[in-house]
Length: 180
Image (cartoon, rainbow, N blue to C red; front, side, top):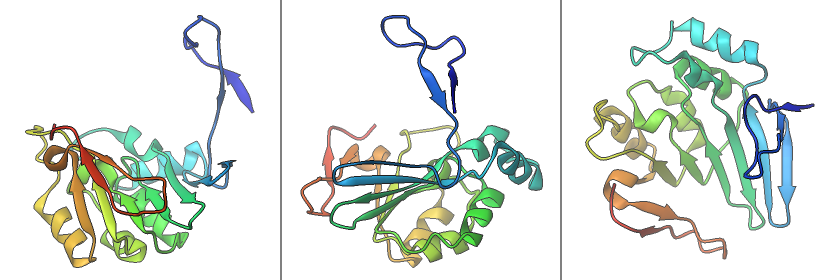
């Protein structure tokens, strides 16, 4: 399944194999399991992107983002939504990913969200990686209200800095470093 990386390589200049990750692919290490939830194929991503004509922020590549399920040994479940736009989020919701303890919100908290997915995930903690004073106004008030209505504690890199999730079974996130 690996193909040479186009123009890519490791620090020694050697080409490294690239794996195409699609729904159902899994990786595991002691204490950690990762499963791809989206996309099922490149065609799925392109179809979802075409469904809404892309976002007004103009990047159809967002629906090519990987959505992942990450489960730690203690059962803590993280769902990452990459930069998925609403049509891809709706397709993911149709797959019934179930509840999560933590969600990494889609597209830095843009206004392009599929609320039913967030209600389905019902996460206790929502992570919003976003830069201070970004020109897009992320995260939006609508997204923050959606997360609040879903009962999620929200941690944002523009307010809280880098967020660390301890691996010791204590699901109490810590902020480290300045907001950025």
